[in-house]
Length: 161
Image (cartoon, rainbow, N blue to C red; front, side, top):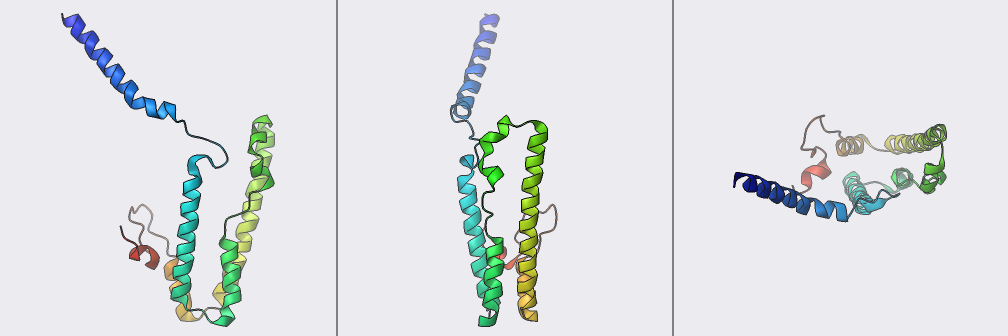
Protein backbone atom coordinates (compact mmCIF):
# COMPACT_ATOMS: atom_id res chain seq x y z
CA UNK A 1 0.00 0.00 0.00
CA UNK A 2 2.80 2.39 0.92
CA UNK A 3 4.55 1.55 -2.34
CA UNK A 4 1.49 2.55 -4.42
CA UNK A 5 1.24 5.82 -2.54
CA UNK A 6 4.89 6.62 -3.40
CA UNK A 7 4.40 5.73 -7.07
CA UNK A 8 1.18 7.77 -7.25
CA UNK A 9 2.90 10.79 -5.67
CA UNK A 10 5.82 10.54 -8.08
CA UNK A 11 3.56 10.24 -11.13
CA UNK A 12 1.43 13.17 -9.93
CA UNK A 13 4.49 15.36 -9.39
CA UNK A 14 6.00 14.45 -12.79
CA UNK A 15 2.74 15.15 -14.67
CA UNK A 16 2.32 18.49 -12.86
CA UNK A 17 5.84 19.55 -13.81
CA UNK A 18 5.27 18.46 -17.41
CA UNK A 19 2.08 20.53 -17.53
CA UNK A 20 3.91 23.65 -16.39
CA UNK A 21 6.83 23.07 -18.76
CA UNK A 22 4.66 22.44 -21.86
CA UNK A 23 4.14 26.13 -22.82
CA UNK A 24 7.88 26.79 -22.69
CA UNK A 25 8.60 23.83 -24.97
CA UNK A 26 5.70 24.59 -27.32
CA UNK A 27 6.83 28.17 -28.08
CA UNK A 28 10.64 28.30 -28.15
CA UNK A 29 12.39 31.66 -28.16
CA UNK A 30 13.30 32.81 -31.65
CA UNK A 31 16.98 33.73 -31.70
CA UNK A 32 16.89 35.33 -35.15
CA UNK A 33 18.19 38.83 -35.93
CA UNK A 34 15.32 40.48 -34.05
CA UNK A 35 13.49 37.41 -32.80
CA UNK A 36 10.69 38.13 -30.36
CA UNK A 37 12.42 41.36 -29.35
CA UNK A 38 10.56 43.50 -31.92
CA UNK A 39 8.40 44.96 -29.17
CA UNK A 40 11.52 45.93 -27.24
CA UNK A 41 12.90 47.95 -30.15
CA UNK A 42 9.55 49.65 -30.74
CA UNK A 43 9.27 50.46 -27.04
CA UNK A 44 12.84 51.82 -26.98
CA UNK A 45 12.18 54.01 -30.01
CA UNK A 46 8.98 55.35 -28.43
CA UNK A 47 10.77 56.12 -25.16
CA UNK A 48 13.57 57.89 -27.03
CA UNK A 49 11.06 59.99 -29.01
CA UNK A 50 9.22 60.88 -25.80
CA UNK A 51 12.49 61.82 -24.10
CA UNK A 52 13.51 64.03 -27.03
CA UNK A 53 10.10 65.72 -27.09
CA UNK A 54 10.17 66.51 -23.35
CA UNK A 55 13.76 67.71 -23.58
CA UNK A 56 12.93 69.97 -26.53
CA UNK A 57 9.98 71.46 -24.64
CA UNK A 58 12.10 72.02 -21.53
CA UNK A 59 15.01 73.62 -23.42
CA UNK A 60 12.89 76.20 -25.29
CA UNK A 61 15.39 76.44 -28.15
CA UNK A 62 15.86 79.53 -30.28
CA UNK A 63 15.79 79.30 -34.09
CA UNK A 64 19.59 79.65 -34.10
CA UNK A 65 19.90 76.46 -32.04
CA UNK A 66 17.56 74.35 -34.19
CA UNK A 67 20.24 73.17 -36.65
CA UNK A 68 22.46 71.87 -33.86
CA UNK A 69 19.43 70.18 -32.25
CA UNK A 70 18.52 68.39 -35.49
CA UNK A 71 22.08 67.16 -35.94
CA UNK A 72 22.18 65.97 -32.32
CA UNK A 73 18.84 64.10 -32.62
CA UNK A 74 19.91 62.51 -35.91
CA UNK A 75 23.10 61.23 -34.28
CA UNK A 76 21.03 59.59 -31.51
CA UNK A 77 18.81 57.63 -33.87
CA UNK A 78 18.98 53.88 -34.35
CA UNK A 79 22.02 52.66 -36.23
CA UNK A 80 21.40 51.26 -39.69
CA UNK A 81 21.87 47.52 -39.93
CA UNK A 82 25.47 46.92 -40.91
CA UNK A 83 26.38 44.60 -43.71
CA UNK A 84 27.85 42.07 -41.28
CA UNK A 85 24.81 42.11 -38.98
CA UNK A 86 22.35 41.86 -41.88
CA UNK A 87 23.86 38.54 -42.93
CA UNK A 88 23.59 36.82 -39.55
CA UNK A 89 22.92 33.43 -41.14
CA UNK A 90 26.44 33.50 -42.62
CA UNK A 91 27.98 33.55 -39.13
CA UNK A 92 27.35 29.84 -38.64
CA UNK A 93 29.52 29.10 -41.68
CA UNK A 94 32.49 31.12 -40.37
CA UNK A 95 35.38 29.83 -38.33
CA UNK A 96 35.96 31.23 -34.86
CA UNK A 97 38.76 33.62 -35.95
CA UNK A 98 36.57 34.90 -38.80
CA UNK A 99 33.66 35.49 -36.40
CA UNK A 100 36.02 37.36 -34.08
CA UNK A 101 37.18 39.55 -36.98
CA UNK A 102 33.54 40.30 -37.91
CA UNK A 103 32.74 41.16 -34.30
CA UNK A 104 35.72 43.51 -34.20
CA UNK A 105 34.56 45.15 -37.44
CA UNK A 106 31.06 45.70 -36.00
CA UNK A 107 32.54 47.10 -32.79
CA UNK A 108 34.63 49.59 -34.79
CA UNK A 109 31.49 50.68 -36.69
CA UNK A 110 29.67 51.27 -33.37
CA UNK A 111 32.67 53.17 -31.99
CA UNK A 112 32.76 55.40 -35.08
CA UNK A 113 29.04 56.07 -34.73
CA UNK A 114 29.49 56.91 -31.03
CA UNK A 115 32.31 59.31 -31.92
CA UNK A 116 30.03 61.09 -34.40
CA UNK A 117 27.32 61.30 -31.71
CA UNK A 118 29.75 62.82 -29.21
CA UNK A 119 30.83 65.45 -31.76
CA UNK A 120 27.16 66.35 -32.40
CA UNK A 121 26.50 66.42 -28.63
CA UNK A 122 29.41 68.81 -28.02
CA UNK A 123 28.35 71.08 -30.89
CA UNK A 124 24.78 71.22 -29.56
CA UNK A 125 25.92 71.75 -25.97
CA UNK A 126 28.16 74.64 -27.08
CA UNK A 127 25.19 76.63 -28.47
CA UNK A 128 23.09 76.28 -25.29
CA UNK A 129 22.72 79.02 -22.70
CA UNK A 130 23.81 78.29 -19.11
CA UNK A 131 20.17 77.66 -18.05
CA UNK A 132 19.65 75.31 -21.02
CA UNK A 133 22.88 73.48 -20.18
CA UNK A 134 21.62 72.95 -16.63
CA UNK A 135 18.30 71.59 -17.93
CA UNK A 136 20.08 69.36 -20.45
CA UNK A 137 22.37 68.00 -17.73
CA UNK A 138 19.39 67.30 -15.44
CA UNK A 139 17.73 65.29 -18.21
CA UNK A 140 20.84 63.14 -18.59
CA UNK A 141 21.69 62.42 -14.96
CA UNK A 142 22.81 58.84 -14.44
CA UNK A 143 21.13 57.11 -11.51
CA UNK A 144 23.30 55.98 -8.61
CA UNK A 145 24.59 52.47 -9.20
CA UNK A 146 22.66 49.68 -7.55
CA UNK A 147 19.44 51.65 -7.10
CA UNK A 148 16.27 49.98 -8.33
CA UNK A 149 14.27 53.18 -8.69
CA UNK A 150 15.87 54.83 -11.70
CA UNK A 151 13.61 57.89 -11.69
CA UNK A 152 16.24 60.59 -11.33
CA UNK A 153 15.82 62.70 -14.47
CA UNK A 154 12.91 65.15 -14.78
CA UNK A 155 11.37 62.96 -17.47
CA UNK A 156 11.50 59.84 -15.32
CA UNK A 157 10.21 61.55 -12.17
CA UNK A 158 7.10 62.78 -13.96
CA UNK A 159 6.23 59.32 -15.30
CA UNK A 160 3.75 57.24 -13.26
CA UNK A 161 5.16 54.25 -11.38
